[in-house]
Image (cartoon, rainbow, N blue to C red; front, side, top):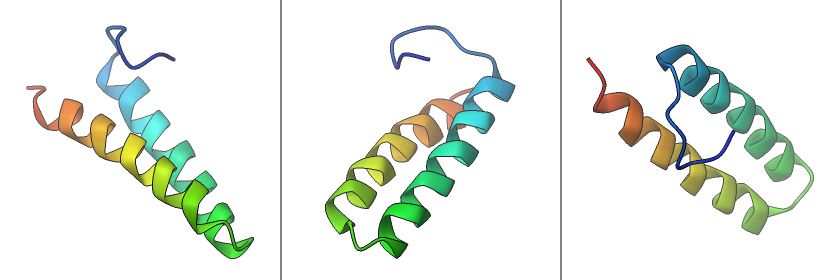
Length: 53
């Protein structure tokens, strides 16, 4: 799923859930930079979701 493509609300929620899991794993593995990058991507999806009806 690319950031520029139109996605359903369900697709966005699934992406947030998956990325959250990956960010948590990165933190547990001692990769804070990776976790921070993933969190930034999550923030973009959350903003997009907030703009939806």
